[in-house]
Length: 613
Image 1 (cartoon, one colour):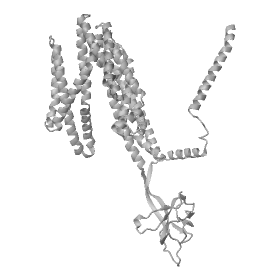
Image 2 (image 1 turned 45 degrees about the horizontal axis):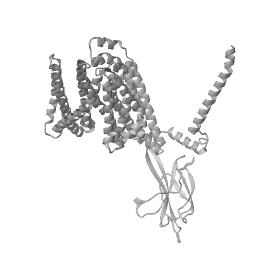
Image 3 (image 1 turned 90 degrees about the horizontal axis):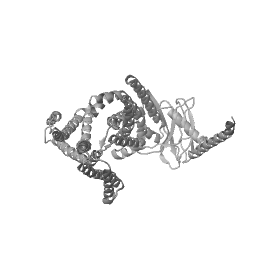
Image 4 (image 1 turned 180 degrees about the vertical axis):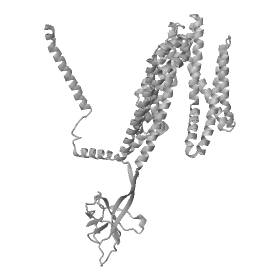
């Protein structure tokens, strides 16, 4: 008890100091954020806020056909020296009267009218004399709108302009814009409907493309799958050293053969119908490879490698033929289908995308294929050789090449980014340092020592996903607007990239939380890693993957509003234009549309998740 009494004052002092520190932090925060209630209290700002809120509360949803009604009265400026009389501009309905039929320039004039509808908005103009009736101009006599009184009349004193004189009669005109017929959807509603449809499909395409890419990435970023992947040191450095060779060969092969296949179709050197044999050729090659790979003899592995190369050649040629056929068919269907020409355009754009990405697809295919073959072959060789001098020499040579690659690739990127001129210093020196460092590491490490290859891939994938997720889609949209131009295409690219980062993380965490029992059961049957993923992992993750995908589509619809502010198309682009032009009634229509679409998608996605999960 005595000890508690002694520490009680210290606790009070500590608590008091903590409270003071918190107050100081928030006080400084108020200064940094410039929180000040003096400006909001200003009458001008309060009036501006009131005007904006009233405009937003009156969305421009409907419009009427407008009948323009003009009521005129003649006047002479200046008064003539002889007696005169002006003709009466008689017309049914409303009328106006002038306090005098002539006046000196700059004099005051009393304009009054009657027969208008109570509360009707009136615009008062002076119409100077012109010899060409179609070129007459209207000069405002009153800047503000005149409102008719309860009896449908008005009276307004105006000042005539000093420079408008003529011997011919001039006019004072009152203009009334009256609604006719029933209301119809306004132009803002039509524009909003077009843009909201564009926004929905913008988000849909971005979500679909992002999902297709993030699914395989999620397996690489799942710790429980990658922690079991190991390879010996010599095999790892071999994969790193030969990966660029696979990339270059694949990019060259697909670029050349794919381009040749496209030219055969598009250039007219081969009838388009011949390309229909391409899928059959591909299936025959795959079947042949599978049959030959399954034969157990000492030449089976070599034969499989040869068939693999032949298969890559066939795939490249088939991709080019199919893409060329798609270009021809798509172009013809676009012009032949009329209103449904978008179907042909879709085929054309997809085919054109395949042609454009052919070197990239080939590079990735060659990289993974060549690296996989090199890794398996080198690992079998090193495990067979053990710790012999030949195995160590092989490991050291591959390590030197791998170190040069690991340091030269980022150095090349830095050289290109900062436009460094001395490539020997900016690329050669880092490559030499990397070769020495990794080569010395190979001297110390045994060639057959197991290395956590899967965890290296895991941390690399996680790092890329974290970096992409840290960049706001708005920044991505700005970059893509510079690249592909203003419009929804830039929005699709930005949202797709951010979707890959977000869904890749969510998917991988879902993979990490699956039950291990099915994986162990499938593995015990002797299944390889791909079979384990297909039969033990995928069945457990399909429902949450679908739920995450639908939720991401919902997010992308909302994010597209902000993307539009950077030129990424969609409803946000139209909203930004109206806000910049202070058209708050039109902007209110877009806000209502966004709220309706987001609420509807949220309800639909919730119902779908309830059925799936």
